[in-house]
Amino acid sequence: MTERYVRNSKIEEAPLGSDIMLFDPAKSQFYVLNSTMAYLWRHCEGEFDMEGIVKSVPKEFALSEGAPVAADMKAGLDELVALGMITKE
Image (cartoon, rainbow, N blue to C red; front, side):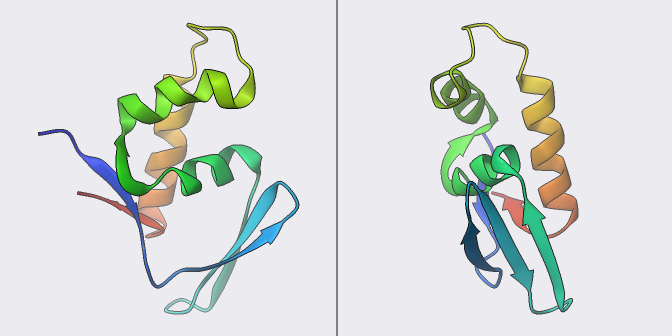
């Protein structure tokens, strides 16, 4: 079964232009996500697995098909997981 990414429901968010500000009340920590990381955050609703997120990137960011974004997206997701912002289910 493919793992899907899900946001931590305790994290609060606020728009900040094309970026997003997140607040983790458990750690009393604020985070500002740039547009790329905000894109990942928005796509972690339990609907997408890694492949689904990567496939949607070229349309969202107007990249050419086949652009090597998988490694960057995986690194970004891994960082969000490490921070406790999202989980894999």
